[in-house]
Image (cartoon, rainbow, N blue to C red; front, side, top):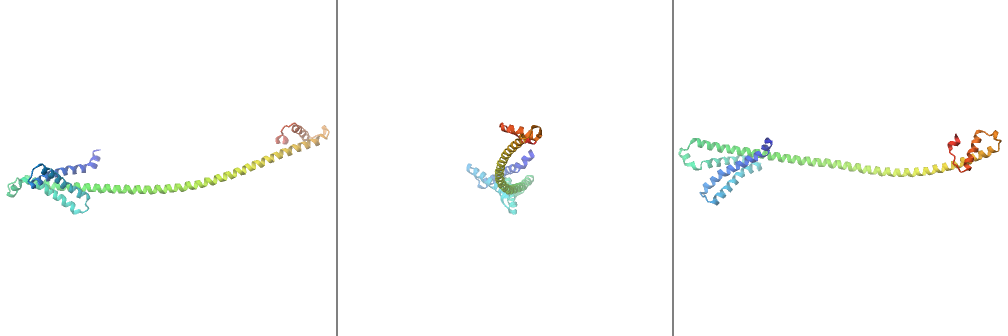
Length: 244
């Protein structure tokens, strides 16, 4: 968790602290140059020093020129060196200054320049990486949108084809239903005609069988007489009874 926090916010926090430190040192230089220590002088010295400090960050992040990204940290290093030695210029010129302090001020100035350059470069790299990630994300979104549109178009075409097929199927079903109803009506007429014919045929067979002596009648003739009596009585006779 700490690594992720430092990865996302570490550079920004360190740049903020560096801007504050440079603002402090540069404000001393501005006050020294103006030789004024009123409230308004101090205010604008702080504002100006913050502007000078922020310029380096903006140049490192926004500029595409390599040389200018080197020049601004170098100027920051010089400002730090001058800021640390404002009160010791006479001692340095006369050679009576503490050499350790002088070397330390040189080291701090160079180190500040390197830190500023490195942090600005890292911040610029992160900014470019974020921009590239955003660009890739936007490209992925557009690609997904295009693929989704193709899929939706295919589905709409399939739905349209299915709708046409369903319409044709419904038309066929309606046509077949009409044919089936017509066939059922024909079958009903044939069945009614067959029943009438069977009834008349049984009555005819029974009429012929009754002219014979009862002892001379065949089993089919006897069955015909029985069935004919049922028909005369108003009962229905099934085909199975005739064929039994």
